[in-house]
Image (tube, rainbow, N blue to C red; front, side, top):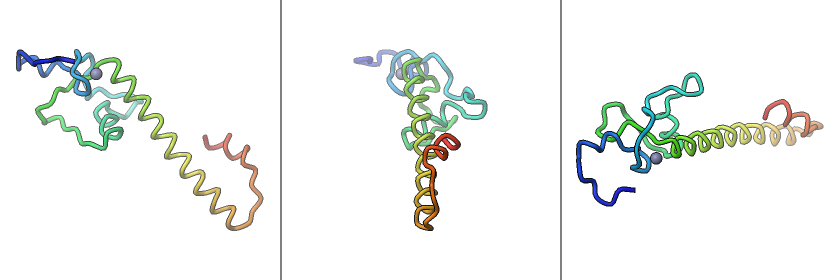
Length: 106
Ligand SMILES: [Zn+2]
């Protein structure tokens, strides 16, 4: 982390998340259709615009954390939907083979 930002010109080269050296452009696409900026936005509940003044790069460490966070959120959301469906089925008194359902959906 930088103590004092000496050269304002260099801000654009910092990682947007931790202020270390940025390595990747956050508008690069990953997972075929998702931009890194979108992943950061989902993990931090913030909006990132190409036109804002903040740095547009991210370091390797923060990138790994954002990917991990995104994968966690995605899996969590899938599991919540699965649980919701299971609870609906349980309410309608149908037999449920939980293990088989988990292998299919997760
Ligand atoms: Zn970083």
